[in-house]
Amino acid sequence: MSERLCLKPEQWPASDRTSWELALDGDDEDLELPGARHRLSRETLQGYATGYGHYLAFLARTGELVEGETPVERATPARLNKWLLSLRERGLAATALRQYLVNCHAALRLMAPHADLLWMRRPGGRSLKRAIPGKPKSTVAYDVADILLHVQRLHASALMEKDGPDRRQALRDVALIGILVMRAPRVGSLVQMMMGEHIWQTSDGLWNVRFPKEDTKADSRIDYPLDEECSVWVTDYLRLARAGFPYAGKWEHLWMGMKGPMTREGLQQICERRTLEWLGKAYGPHAFRKWNRISAARRSPELAFDASLVQGNSVEVSAEHYAEANSLHAALRYARNLKEMRRQLGIKTQASARPRRAAAPKSGLAAKPDAPHPWLTSQRQRRSPRS
Image 1 (cartoon, one colour):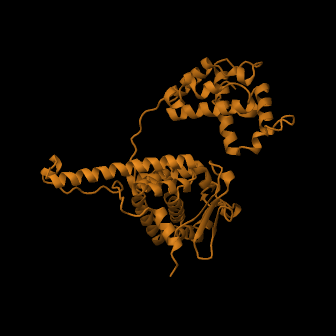
Image 2: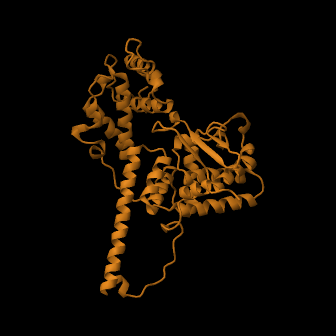
Image 3: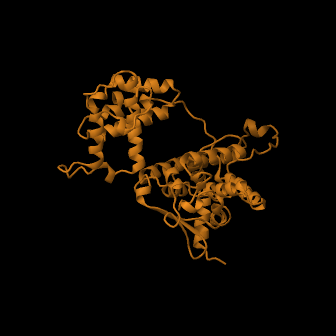
């Protein structure tokens, strides 16, 4: 047991295992605190158990897993600090360290709801981001209009290929990445999509996507149509590719892999493989959510707010994105006004005084603030009568 990196709940000490089972099922004498199974999703509880299981495995490896201690007694600042240091030595980033601590704290809160554990989330009265700072990340914000060009080319080339595994995977990737680009749903919601439950075809031939509130992080239902082009991609995948995947007939999952329904790891690999091919660098599925929001913000603050809501963010987060987009457009207006003032006064900047050289545009890097955002385009198409 001392060699394991994570202990599963059935491998926990008796006191921890009993507390966890009670937290999941609830206490019949405390009607105000129902069991966690009735309040949280299975994936969320699994994440909490994994975080706490990593902590218990560390205590077992270091000889500090005392059998008679309660879960709260095990959580001491000194032990947690050594645990985080060991995780850092394994090469984990600050984001992963914070998430491990958050999950461990959440598991302890379920097992001991009345214990004072705030110090785990705010060590020294500071936020976790300040207590466990990470390195600044320089991320290229690709415009979704550029990504859509790559998706369109992949779709066209796939239709010209003979039927086979490569063609089926390409058509699947087109529909999958197309939905990521156009709607940017959460990874967990996208992977678990079921035929007839999360996606269905309407009478006008378009596809509609719906995620019930229990499948969303913000606990609110998401319901939206796909635009005409994205609907064609989904139709081609279902008509020409899905049935050819092994075990496709045994599952109702929308997205299929070569060994069965697609997993989060499979989605990660698809996104990284395609973006490496298109952009020269591998990006995971979460990058599409950021690109979708930033592309919307480049066009208008109102569209940034709408895109954030469509992505399943809370109203508070959407309002924050709206404020950020307002600041961006204020800066753009200020720059335009300043340029106009300089022009009227006859002031030339150093850059405008020297002759310009035409630079070849880099594919995928150019921002297109004047091009319509796919979300806005799809809504216009949805409202317009079909010819």
